[in-house]
Structure formats: structure tokens, C-alpha cells
Image (cartoon, rainbow, N blue to C red; front, top):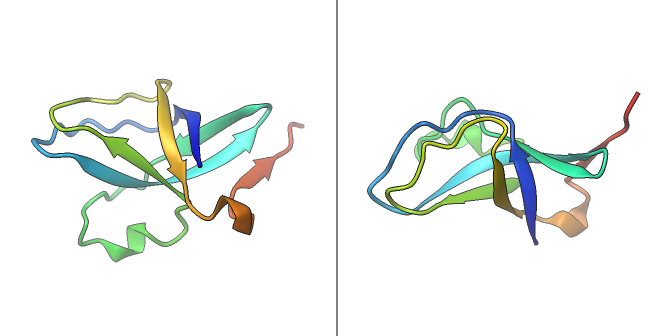
Length: 88
């Protein structure tokens, strides 16, 4: 399922190819928010742990900065891996 989300961390790298960046997305106060792991390399398997979404970045685009609206693909959204955060 694709959703619109607010990016909470910067992604400053501009790549010459399309990328899927692992991300963690949660829902709060009627909006989705997405945080990117510190390490994005495809060889860093630890960045896959705890992620629940993918952020598609077309080639030669970016940088993407915190606060921007983006679209992410939720992974296993029927498996309740999306965290719903209550406001205090």
C-alpha cells in the first residue's frame, strides 16, 4: 500500500540510478511520518531490521530534506507492523 508521508530525516545523496531506501513509517495524528536509517547501503543488512516501508527515489533526483512530503510503500501493512502513535 502506498501512502503519503512526511520525511523526518534528510537523504542528501543523488544517485544516477533508481533506488529503494529502507524506511520506518508510523502513523500519528492523521498523518504518516517516515524516518530513514542512518546507513542506507544495500550491503548493510542491519538497516533492514526494524523497517516497515520503502522510499522510492528516481535517478538523478534529490536531495530530500526533513519536512518534505514523500510517497512510501508500506511493507506488510496487514501484519500490523505500522506503529500507531497516540498524541499526549
